[in-house]
Length: 80
Image 1 (cartoon, rainbow, N blue to C red):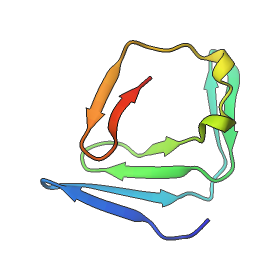
Image 2: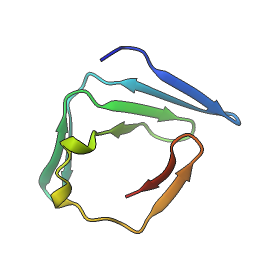
Image 3: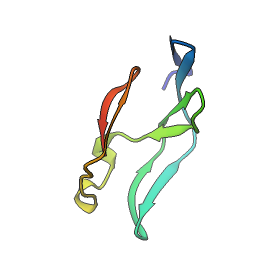
Image 4: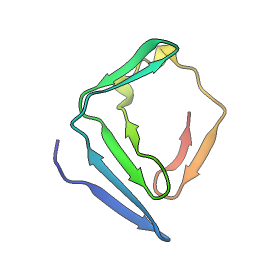
């Protein structure tokens, strides 16, 4: 994956998305639901870093949808 990053700015807020060379594992209720070897990490003003997993690498059968919906001017609507 390229070492380039994507940077965007909106009304004083900045978002930087860049590749990460770490292996990241997601665990829910003691069960590994995803292991990704090259996730994207997003740094956003006033928020902790967030790792993005390709949906194809996530055990979606172990998850259930939430009613939570959020909106971001950079990313649009998100469902959880």
